[in-house]
Length: 313
Image (cartoon, rainbow, N blue to C red; front, side, top):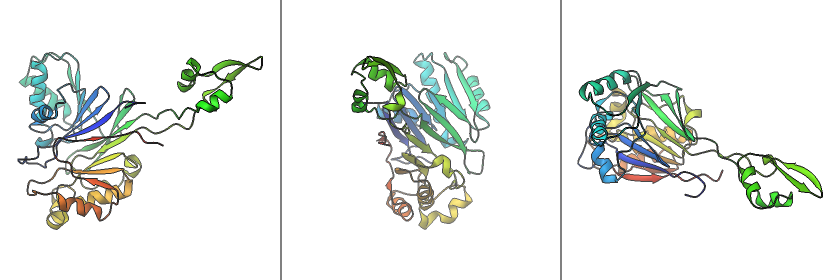
C-alpha cells in the first residue's frame, strides 16, 4: 500500500470455549508491515497459521485472560519456534499471572534458544512499537481480564505541492524535507527566505485503530478510548434468543450487546467473534447486532482476513 504500512487482521480462531468443526478457539493475528502480533492464542493456533500461510514469525503475544481457550496454543507455538531455531526475543503480555505462565513454559521447555519474557499489563498500560502502540483496558469477565487497542501514531498532513511551488520551493529534495517536518531555505526575489512545514502541510491525520475486547460483559466506561476504531472485534458468545440471561451468568456478551457497544463508540466495522459451540449459524448474531448498530457488521469465518485501509481524514 502506497504511503504507509499495510495492516491486516487475520481471524485464526473465532470459537467460544469449545472448538467446533469450523471454528478454532480464540486467536487474532494482526500484521502491520513486517510486524506480527497475536492477540490470544488458543488451541490449534499453529495449524491455523499454516492454513493461513502466515508463518510463525510472531513479534509479541497479548493474552486477554487466563482461561485455557485463550492461551493453550502458546505452548506448542513456543516449542515450534525453538525447534526452528528462533533467536529473536519474544514477550508475552497479559494480566496478573503472566509471570507464572511464562515460568511454566520455561520449566516444560528448559532449552528455549531465545529470550522468552513476561510483561504484566493492566488498565491503561501502553506498549510502544515502531509507529504504533498497544494499550490495555479493563474488561469484565469474572476474573482479571483486559482488552487491547492497537493504534497507529498520527500521520503527517497532506503536502500542498502547488502551494509549495507558489512559495518558490523548487520540486525535488526540498519537498521531502518539508514533508519530514523540516524547514527549508530558498532564495526568492534575491532574498533568502525560510519556508516552514506549517506553510505547506495540512493538519496531521490519525492513524488506524483496531480494538479487541477479548471475553467480557459490555464495556460501557471506555467510550473515549474505544471511539472511532476502524475495526472493533467484540465477543458475541450468545444470540439474544438463547443467551440474554446466560451471558450475564458467565460474564459474556450477546451479539445485541456488542451492537450496543458499537453504537456508542462508532467503529467503521464491527466484527463479532467467540461464538458458542451451540450455534451452527451466526445469522441471528448479525441481525441482533443490527438492532443497535447501523454500520458494517461481520461474523468472520476462521481464516478470514480484513485489510484496514488508511482513512482520508
